[in-house]
Image (tube, rainbow, N blue to C red; front, side, top):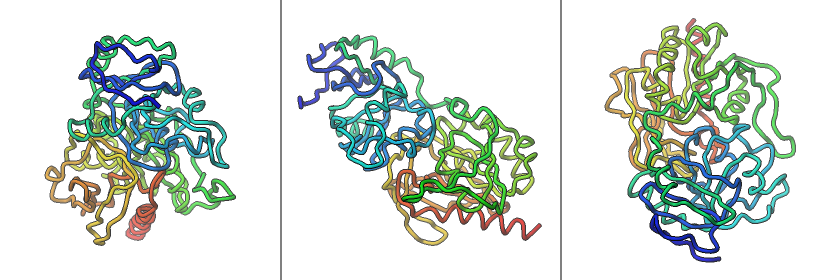
Length: 395
């Protein structure tokens, strides 16, 4: 395989190149095209997971982003109809180190290249993903354009301008783009080998899940704990949520700037909290809960994306390895006196969890549903049910 090169904006494409990643600063990473033959602009990030690329690409939290995979062998187990977190991937494109090989897994239904094409997702392979990762690590997540041009023709200055003109994720409400448009019920539970996904037979509690970009496996984990789930749109008001008479409310993960989504989400969450209904938030839901409690959030330089992120649970002293995908975080110093920090990142000390001391609400920044990732944090779904138990006992 020809070695990838980083070129200036005015350099001609190598004869072998059919794709490229073009950054706003003019850097060009030449490679070979995969997926759809088109271009897409977004924020370039990296994910360090070694498995679960299909779950990653279909995670709605990646809306507006181009995913660089640090693991070199992406596509080697193909794709299937089960390992998806949403029907329509919200990610803008993918950047890979190695070529996509033929699937080598008994569950594979379609090669990754064909799957990307079926979802109109462009990508580039054969590039130096280590160099891209270092750029993001050292300089923050840049705007970029991933372009797949089978004819080998590239208008680099135009692509640089597209990347430069793109406004970026800060201030952008993307939850509105990926949320459900109508209410629906969910009773599918977690997957087991030889049986596939299970089904909730008898519900103990009723949970309303607010969909800011919810991953399916989160809903499955809720169902697996005995909760009947009703999913409502991100724009649902407190009245919309409470009319379902929920035993608990779940705030889902999602993409974009929490402050932008919070314009309509915070009043709804505050209305639910006023009724003392137990609340559990994950990822964007965590950030929105913090905003609703009086805290603030900020854009991170590089974010946390991977299935190997160590987090300490301050309530137990235990360290768990977690799956994460976020580019914004809660500012712990902004939290009021009635909110305590429950989890912290052992990578950089950023906030990973909170709970209110005067009402039954808590949240974490990471993904306890572990899709993909380790299962260390599954206990949080049980903790949510226990909170519902305690709330109902008090009533």
